[in-house]
Image 1 (cartoon, rainbow, N blue to C red):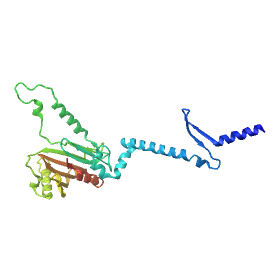
Image 2: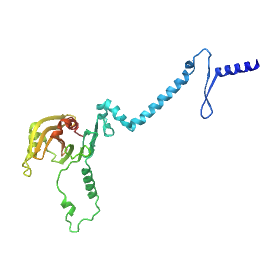
Image 3: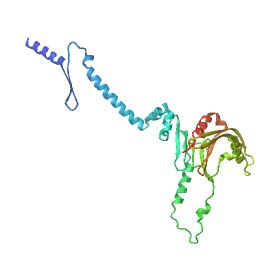
Length: 288
């Protein structure tokens, strides 16, 4: 009978007291179990605490993931409100809607381009070479004449930036050329968008070195920015020769003694697949 009473007391003690022990050995919670309550009801306080801690942990991990664009989470979130993200220039860091942003603070222009495109490495090497020449420690000639390096310099306008698909042959790309012009130069002097487009076509086909080159103006539009008082002439034209056929979308504008020309081009055979990207690039181009 004593043995029976002891077993019963042990069972009652087990059912009335439940201790949860942390790995450190300290008690985390002591629940007074009620014989008339179900196990789910008895564990409800613990479940609530666990749920709060789980949500806090997930939230913290999400912030880290967004900050690092982990598996594209940041780009996906920003893509839900693309105009807001682009207005904040966040696409300089993270692609938004499949496009990244190029900003040249020195020359003062920006545009977006497909996030999968890469910079033209040739331009990077040339820029590094020019910077090295400017930092040259060579002594000036004793006779006061210009150095041979300066004599070899040519007045050639080459792109400030250029982007295209990796591994391509530069047939599909976008580039920006910035040329110095007189402060009183105005593109409006040529006339409306159509007249400006025709002037560009004449400059392409007027070279005596390429008499076989032909060009055709397809469309021309004027995009006005009243805030900065800049007119953007958007031109679409086709250029062809016996060796190639290209479809171009260009934007021309001028400000503060600089002529800006963005040109996005694709092989004519690739135009149906590329036109959306090229139109998007052209419409995003602006002077900062």
